[in-house]
Length: 247
Image: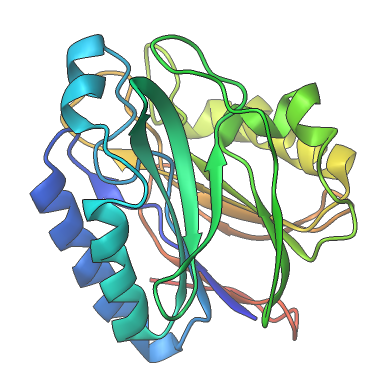
């Protein structure tokens, strides 16, 4: 499996511009012929939690965004994972979906470790694909007992979209290297599953999501990294355990 993590650079609430940026990035990574592309949590809106924002931007699944992403999955012949704000029966969820190469929804995960105005998800799913068996968690789910207790520890890859920021100063490379990165390595070691983590890179906001991406083996060893504070795409061949490429 050739995996591509894109720490998508976005302007919160500017969905049209953010979708255009994704299309540009997919063209950019196309020569690497990735099998699976994973994007961050709340990939096209930013992580929004005010009632007015959530009401404005949340949409059903399936819905307009999954349809558009399905078109891109078919065009680029990729599996595509991304986060979005969901509304269902007047409830709001912080969700992520995994599409196959034909744009079909394979997995639909609702974040379990969340706060109002969101409703918490309850279930972790696993899907067997031509790439292996896959599951999706969102950000803090990686450290949530209810979420990780449901994980099938025999799966081949766990995808973790994030929209993580630091308070006061974000990005903060010194803090990342001193304390935060190790937290994720230890979290992956605890679940003992090969894991891909990708964070949004926000602009024009305070306490912005700080970008970067990690691929970590089941023993908690860092295999490859897209640098903190950047939107460098991370391309990694899991089958051959090759060195990473960043662009």
